[in-house]
Image (cartoon, rainbow, N blue to C red; front, side):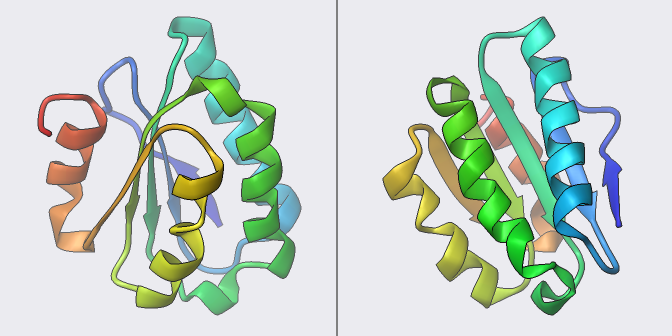
Length: 123
């Protein structure tokens, strides 16, 4: 299940993932949040909080990341992935070599720090 993260700076969007996540749900939610953000700004600064086991993601959901990454190829700014799962880091680490933008991982207990980094208030 995915839920938008509210109370973020106006130039930052975010999604919180928990329980089971389907490919369609992931792509639809991510596209909606990104399109809404791009109406306000020309860059995608994004926070993904992953509090579900990676096995709860449909196999295509991570593949959807690549499709979405290319769809908005030149729009990526900063992306923070907030999770305590090491396996996610290895897979998602590939994006920083394929998609322009800055990608960084944070443990769940550093969500505030991740939001500050994505918003550009911390380097």
